[in-house]
Amino acid sequence: MAAFTRQLQRAHAAVGPPRPSRLLKISKTLPGDIHLARSTLHDNLSGRRLTLPAWDWVATFIAALRITAKETHLDPDKTVGTIEMWSLRYQATKRSLKDGSCDEQPLTAPIAETASTAATRQAEYKITDSASSGTGTDAEKQSRMATGSSEASSLFADEAAHPYQEWFGDHGEELFRAATHEDAEAACRLGILLLCIGQVETALIWVELAAISEDAMALSLRDADSEQRRELASAYAYELALPVGTLEEDPLAPTGTTSRAPAVYYQAAATAGHAGAAYRLGLLKEAQGEPQEALRWLRIAAHASYPEALPRWERLHHALLNEPEDD
Image (cartoon, rainbow, N blue to C red):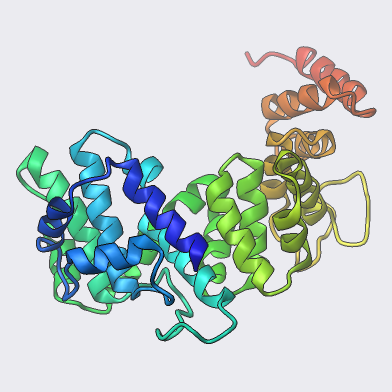
């Protein structure tokens, strides 16, 4: 609880902090029944409160801070954080309160928000975008959000899943959707992949969620020194990519159910500097008919002194140089 309060305090301080009157005014422009008040602002930020505030209050507070950040030309994602990130923090805090002191109902899938919370989040963009464009956001989407239809949560979930799809393809989106429904293994895998690509803060939220369920990899990542965490994550990503029960040279060897997308894990681990992953990714790219990408990853593995990488790179490079030219 204290850690969550400190996170609220840091987000508040990162944007000024803004005057309470400004936050109160912004909150009144947002949809829903929750408006900020001086007394609740003080209680929730002072550390005196012994229970978590309602999620709708947190979402409204964060949306107001994000609007304030945009007004002062700050990046809201970096200074305040996304609604998605805060939803995960909120769930992690609630699940870690073992003494039953929290009087709110548990959130089983915080990303699939209520229609009112989704509307609050959408209104943040409407307010700031309309100031510059005069048109606001897409009218049809706004209408669905504002009316509180069941599509609001789906729209939010689709938008929240988008960066994971961009980072890790379809497998990333699958992991995201599973993790938001309390799949500890999926949450841990997301944490591992995100640590490998340097998305540390978001990664640690997923790791913490998985650690609550006693996931062994998540527990070791959570307790690792910050300087060693990325290296450990790359080793885990490499392990997850390997064909189950084998160390075969062929990266396309049949895999078990826990290794459905080896290229995603190889690439994440290689990005974090794992030489073996870079080598196997090179083999995979070669097998998939992408010789230039194969050369790139084999060269990276060779520079990291992976034993088989240089001979493999030389053979592929020589083969490409001697390919007959098309007439």
